[in-house]
Length: 303
Ligand code: CP
Ligand code: NVA
Image (tube, rainbow, N blue to C red; front, top):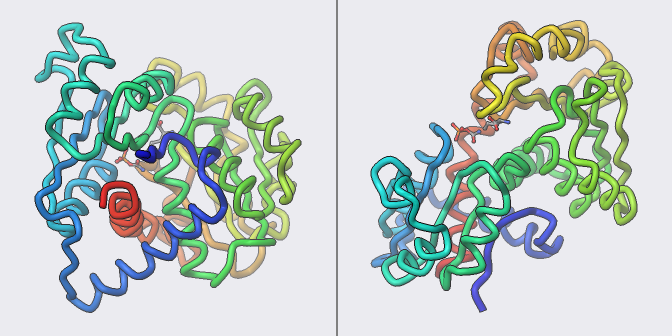
Protein backbone atom coordinates (compact mmCIF):
# COMPACT_ATOMS: atom_id res chain seq x y z
CA UNK A 1 0.00 0.00 0.00
CA UNK A 2 1.25 3.50 -0.76
CA UNK A 3 2.34 5.66 2.14
CA UNK A 4 1.65 9.40 2.23
CA UNK A 5 3.27 12.06 4.41
CA UNK A 6 0.44 14.42 5.30
CA UNK A 7 1.16 15.00 8.98
CA UNK A 8 3.76 13.93 11.55
CA UNK A 9 0.82 12.72 13.65
CA UNK A 10 0.11 10.00 11.09
CA UNK A 11 3.65 8.64 11.35
CA UNK A 12 4.75 6.22 14.05
CA UNK A 13 7.78 6.98 16.20
CA UNK A 14 9.59 4.18 14.35
CA UNK A 15 8.76 5.67 10.96
CA UNK A 16 10.06 9.08 12.04
CA UNK A 17 13.23 7.53 13.40
CA UNK A 18 13.69 5.69 10.09
CA UNK A 19 13.45 9.03 8.24
CA UNK A 20 16.00 10.62 10.57
CA UNK A 21 18.37 7.67 10.27
CA UNK A 22 18.06 7.63 6.48
CA UNK A 23 18.69 11.38 6.35
CA UNK A 24 21.86 10.89 8.38
CA UNK A 25 23.11 8.20 5.99
CA UNK A 26 22.23 10.23 2.90
CA UNK A 27 23.90 13.35 4.29
CA UNK A 28 27.09 11.40 5.03
CA UNK A 29 27.09 9.92 1.52
CA UNK A 30 26.51 13.34 0.02
CA UNK A 31 29.36 14.91 2.02
CA UNK A 32 31.66 12.08 0.91
CA UNK A 33 30.71 12.75 -2.71
CA UNK A 34 29.12 9.30 -3.16
CA UNK A 35 26.40 8.82 -5.75
CA UNK A 36 23.19 7.10 -4.72
CA UNK A 37 20.45 6.96 -7.31
CA UNK A 38 17.61 4.74 -6.08
CA UNK A 39 14.97 6.86 -7.85
CA UNK A 40 16.42 6.58 -11.35
CA UNK A 41 13.61 6.89 -13.90
CA UNK A 42 11.14 8.20 -11.29
CA UNK A 43 9.41 11.58 -11.27
CA UNK A 44 7.93 13.83 -8.60
CA UNK A 45 5.23 16.40 -9.41
CA UNK A 46 5.53 19.46 -7.16
CA UNK A 47 2.41 21.62 -6.95
CA UNK A 48 2.95 25.04 -5.39
CA UNK A 49 -0.12 27.15 -4.66
CA UNK A 50 2.03 29.36 -2.38
CA UNK A 51 5.59 30.67 -2.86
CA UNK A 52 8.65 28.71 -1.76
CA UNK A 53 12.44 28.83 -1.83
CA UNK A 54 13.68 26.04 0.46
CA UNK A 55 10.94 23.47 -0.10
CA UNK A 56 11.02 23.81 -3.86
CA UNK A 57 14.80 23.79 -4.20
CA UNK A 58 15.43 21.01 -1.69
CA UNK A 59 12.82 18.69 -3.24
CA UNK A 60 13.94 19.48 -6.78
CA UNK A 61 17.67 19.11 -6.09
CA UNK A 62 16.92 16.10 -3.89
CA UNK A 63 15.11 14.30 -6.73
CA UNK A 64 17.99 15.14 -9.07
CA UNK A 65 20.59 13.76 -6.66
CA UNK A 66 18.58 10.56 -6.18
CA UNK A 67 18.58 10.01 -9.95
CA UNK A 68 14.98 11.11 -10.54
CA UNK A 69 13.25 14.15 -11.95
CA UNK A 70 11.02 16.83 -10.40
CA UNK A 71 8.39 18.94 -12.15
CA UNK A 72 7.44 22.34 -10.78
CA UNK A 73 3.72 22.98 -11.34
CA UNK A 74 1.97 26.19 -10.38
CA UNK A 75 -1.79 26.64 -10.63
CA UNK A 76 -1.57 29.53 -13.11
CA UNK A 77 0.16 27.35 -15.68
CA UNK A 78 -1.86 24.19 -15.15
CA UNK A 79 -5.54 23.37 -15.45
CA UNK A 80 -5.82 23.45 -11.64
CA UNK A 81 -5.96 27.24 -11.99
CA UNK A 82 -8.86 26.90 -14.43
CA UNK A 83 -10.95 24.76 -12.14
CA UNK A 84 -9.87 21.19 -12.84
CA UNK A 85 -10.54 19.42 -9.58
CA UNK A 86 -7.93 18.18 -7.14
CA UNK A 87 -9.40 14.69 -7.50
CA UNK A 88 -9.03 14.64 -11.30
CA UNK A 89 -5.57 16.20 -11.09
CA UNK A 90 -4.55 13.50 -8.61
CA UNK A 91 -5.86 10.74 -10.88
CA UNK A 92 -4.10 12.15 -13.95
CA UNK A 93 -0.77 12.89 -12.29
CA UNK A 94 -0.74 9.39 -10.82
CA UNK A 95 -0.61 8.04 -14.39
CA UNK A 96 2.63 9.96 -15.08
CA UNK A 97 4.59 10.40 -11.89
CA UNK A 98 5.69 8.34 -8.90
CA UNK A 99 4.99 10.91 -6.20
CA UNK A 100 3.25 14.24 -5.64
CA UNK A 101 4.40 17.03 -3.33
CA UNK A 102 1.85 19.77 -2.72
CA UNK A 103 1.99 23.14 -0.93
CA UNK A 104 -1.40 24.77 -0.57
CA UNK A 105 -3.83 26.51 1.77
CA UNK A 106 -6.35 24.07 3.27
CA UNK A 107 -5.03 20.78 4.67
CA UNK A 108 -8.20 19.17 3.28
CA UNK A 109 -6.92 19.85 -0.24
CA UNK A 110 -3.83 17.77 0.47
CA UNK A 111 -5.93 15.03 2.03
CA UNK A 112 -8.19 14.99 -1.01
CA UNK A 113 -5.16 14.77 -3.29
CA UNK A 114 -3.88 11.82 -1.25
CA UNK A 115 -7.19 10.01 -1.31
CA UNK A 116 -7.47 10.18 -5.12
CA UNK A 117 -3.79 9.68 -5.99
CA UNK A 118 -2.43 6.18 -6.39
CA UNK A 119 1.10 7.47 -5.70
CA UNK A 120 2.49 8.86 -2.42
CA UNK A 121 1.50 12.44 -1.57
CA UNK A 122 3.75 14.68 0.53
CA UNK A 123 2.57 17.77 2.41
CA UNK A 124 4.93 20.62 1.46
CA UNK A 125 3.03 23.01 3.82
CA UNK A 126 -0.59 23.83 4.42
CA UNK A 127 -2.25 26.48 6.58
CA UNK A 128 -2.42 23.81 9.27
CA UNK A 129 0.86 21.89 9.10
CA UNK A 130 4.45 21.88 7.85
CA UNK A 131 5.65 18.33 8.58
CA UNK A 132 8.75 18.27 6.33
CA UNK A 133 10.07 21.36 8.09
CA UNK A 134 9.72 19.94 11.59
CA UNK A 135 11.23 16.58 10.60
CA UNK A 136 14.20 18.56 9.36
CA UNK A 137 14.32 20.66 12.54
CA UNK A 138 14.27 17.55 14.72
CA UNK A 139 17.04 16.10 12.55
CA UNK A 140 19.04 19.30 13.16
CA UNK A 141 18.56 19.02 16.95
CA UNK A 142 19.62 15.36 16.82
CA UNK A 143 22.68 16.25 14.74
CA UNK A 144 23.73 19.06 17.10
CA UNK A 145 22.88 17.49 20.46
CA UNK A 146 22.89 13.74 19.77
CA UNK A 147 19.34 13.38 21.12
CA UNK A 148 15.95 15.04 21.29
CA UNK A 149 14.19 13.01 23.99
CA UNK A 150 13.93 14.93 27.25
CA UNK A 151 15.11 18.24 25.78
CA UNK A 152 13.12 21.41 26.38
CA UNK A 153 12.09 23.03 23.11
CA UNK A 154 10.46 26.48 23.27
CA UNK A 155 8.42 27.78 20.38
CA UNK A 156 7.80 31.52 20.66
CA UNK A 157 5.36 33.34 18.38
CA UNK A 158 2.36 32.54 16.26
CA UNK A 159 0.45 29.29 16.85
CA UNK A 160 0.63 28.50 13.13
CA UNK A 161 1.38 25.54 10.83
CA UNK A 162 4.95 25.31 12.16
CA UNK A 163 3.79 25.40 15.80
CA UNK A 164 1.18 22.70 15.10
CA UNK A 165 3.81 20.44 13.57
CA UNK A 166 6.13 21.02 16.53
CA UNK A 167 3.30 19.69 18.72
CA UNK A 168 2.97 16.56 16.60
CA UNK A 169 6.75 16.13 16.70
CA UNK A 170 6.85 16.40 20.50
CA UNK A 171 4.00 13.93 20.78
CA UNK A 172 5.78 11.31 18.68
CA UNK A 173 9.39 11.87 19.80
CA UNK A 174 9.12 12.70 23.47
CA UNK A 175 10.75 16.08 23.86
CA UNK A 176 9.17 18.70 26.08
CA UNK A 177 7.57 21.54 24.18
CA UNK A 178 6.68 24.95 25.56
CA UNK A 179 4.65 27.17 23.27
CA UNK A 180 4.46 30.90 24.03
CA UNK A 181 1.81 32.59 21.90
CA UNK A 182 -0.25 35.77 22.36
CA UNK A 183 -3.87 35.28 23.50
CA UNK A 184 -5.99 34.52 20.47
CA UNK A 185 -3.02 33.22 18.45
CA UNK A 186 -2.64 29.81 20.05
CA UNK A 187 -2.00 26.63 18.03
CA UNK A 188 -4.84 24.51 16.69
CA UNK A 189 -6.99 23.44 19.62
CA UNK A 190 -7.65 19.92 18.38
CA UNK A 191 -3.96 19.20 17.74
CA UNK A 192 -3.05 20.61 21.12
CA UNK A 193 -5.65 18.73 23.14
CA UNK A 194 -4.98 15.48 21.28
CA UNK A 195 -1.28 15.83 22.10
CA UNK A 196 -2.00 16.72 25.71
CA UNK A 197 -4.01 13.53 26.08
CA UNK A 198 -1.64 11.22 24.25
CA UNK A 199 1.81 12.69 24.88
CA UNK A 200 4.45 10.95 26.90
CA UNK A 201 6.38 14.21 26.71
CA UNK A 202 5.02 17.40 28.24
CA UNK A 203 3.41 20.04 26.08
CA UNK A 204 2.70 23.40 27.69
CA UNK A 205 1.03 26.54 26.42
CA UNK A 206 1.82 29.91 27.96
CA UNK A 207 1.44 33.57 27.08
CA UNK A 208 4.82 34.35 28.65
CA UNK A 209 7.84 33.91 26.34
CA UNK A 210 10.24 33.99 29.31
CA UNK A 211 8.50 31.03 30.95
CA UNK A 212 8.88 29.10 27.71
CA UNK A 213 12.51 30.13 27.24
CA UNK A 214 13.60 29.41 30.82
CA UNK A 215 16.19 26.63 30.76
CA UNK A 216 15.37 25.78 27.13
CA UNK A 217 17.74 23.70 25.02
CA UNK A 218 16.13 25.08 21.85
CA UNK A 219 14.22 28.27 21.06
CA UNK A 220 12.37 28.26 17.77
CA UNK A 221 10.27 30.90 16.10
CA UNK A 222 8.55 31.73 12.83
CA UNK A 223 7.04 34.73 11.06
CA UNK A 224 4.15 36.55 12.75
CA UNK A 225 2.13 36.71 9.53
CA UNK A 226 2.20 33.56 7.43
CA UNK A 227 1.61 33.29 3.71
CA UNK A 228 -1.98 34.33 3.10
CA UNK A 229 -2.05 36.62 6.17
CA UNK A 230 -0.16 39.54 4.60
CA UNK A 231 -3.10 41.91 5.21
CA UNK A 232 -2.84 41.31 8.97
CA UNK A 233 0.89 42.00 9.13
CA UNK A 234 0.83 45.51 10.64
CA UNK A 235 -1.75 44.55 13.23
CA UNK A 236 0.20 41.41 14.13
CA UNK A 237 3.47 43.34 14.52
CA UNK A 238 1.80 45.26 17.37
CA UNK A 239 0.24 42.19 18.99
CA UNK A 240 3.40 40.09 18.82
CA UNK A 241 6.02 42.64 19.87
CA UNK A 242 6.70 40.95 23.24
CA UNK A 243 7.30 37.65 21.45
CA UNK A 244 10.51 38.62 19.69
CA UNK A 245 13.49 36.28 19.93
CA UNK A 246 16.21 38.71 21.00
CA UNK A 247 19.24 38.69 23.35
CA UNK A 248 17.02 39.47 26.37
CA UNK A 249 14.93 36.38 25.78
CA UNK A 250 18.00 34.22 25.20
CA UNK A 251 19.29 35.09 28.67
CA UNK A 252 16.51 32.93 30.13
CA UNK A 253 17.61 29.85 28.18
CA UNK A 254 20.54 27.49 28.66
CA UNK A 255 23.93 28.91 27.79
CA UNK A 256 24.22 26.52 24.85
CA UNK A 257 20.68 27.11 23.56
CA UNK A 258 20.10 26.46 19.84
CA UNK A 259 18.08 29.15 18.07
CA UNK A 260 15.95 27.91 15.20
CA UNK A 261 13.78 29.51 12.53
CA UNK A 262 12.28 27.67 9.57
CA UNK A 263 12.87 30.77 7.38
CA UNK A 264 12.09 33.02 5.61
CA UNK A 265 12.60 35.43 8.53
CA UNK A 266 11.32 38.92 8.94
CA UNK A 267 14.47 40.23 10.59
CA UNK A 268 13.70 42.82 13.25
CA UNK A 269 10.22 41.39 13.84
CA UNK A 270 10.13 37.85 15.26
CA UNK A 271 13.95 37.61 15.46
CA UNK A 272 16.70 40.21 15.68
CA UNK A 273 19.74 40.29 13.39
CA UNK A 274 21.96 39.87 16.43
CA UNK A 275 20.35 36.55 17.35
CA UNK A 276 19.87 35.26 13.81
CA UNK A 277 23.51 35.94 12.94
CA UNK A 278 24.81 35.10 16.42
CA UNK A 279 26.59 32.04 17.84
CA UNK A 280 23.41 30.22 18.95
CA UNK A 281 21.72 30.34 15.57
CA UNK A 282 21.45 27.15 13.50
CA UNK A 283 18.95 28.54 11.01
CA UNK A 284 21.07 27.90 7.93
CA UNK A 285 21.93 24.37 9.07
CA UNK A 286 18.18 23.78 9.35
CA UNK A 287 17.73 25.03 5.80
CA UNK A 288 20.59 22.81 4.59
CA UNK A 289 19.09 19.78 6.31
CA UNK A 290 15.84 20.19 4.40
CA UNK A 291 17.72 18.67 1.43
CA UNK A 292 18.82 15.56 3.29
CA UNK A 293 15.53 15.02 5.09
CA UNK A 294 13.56 15.52 1.87
CA UNK A 295 15.79 12.92 0.18
CA UNK A 296 15.15 10.50 3.04
CA UNK A 297 11.38 11.00 2.72
CA UNK A 298 11.48 10.58 -1.07
CA UNK A 299 13.59 7.44 -0.82
CA UNK A 300 11.41 5.83 1.81
CA UNK A 301 8.11 6.70 0.09
CA UNK A 302 8.96 6.31 -3.60
CA UNK A 303 11.58 3.57 -3.89
N1 CP B 1 10.87 26.88 5.43
C1 CP B 1 10.26 26.79 4.24
O1 CP B 1 9.40 25.96 3.99
O2 CP B 1 10.72 27.69 3.32
P1 CP B 1 10.10 27.98 1.91
O3 CP B 1 8.79 28.69 2.10
O4 CP B 1 11.14 28.87 1.25
O5 CP B 1 9.91 26.69 1.17
N1 NVA C 1 4.33 29.88 8.84
C1 NVA C 1 5.01 30.21 7.61
C2 NVA C 1 6.02 29.18 7.26
C3 NVA C 1 6.82 29.46 6.03
C4 NVA C 1 7.76 28.37 5.69
C5 NVA C 1 3.99 30.35 6.51
O1 NVA C 1 3.06 29.53 6.44
O2 NVA C 1 4.09 31.29 5.72
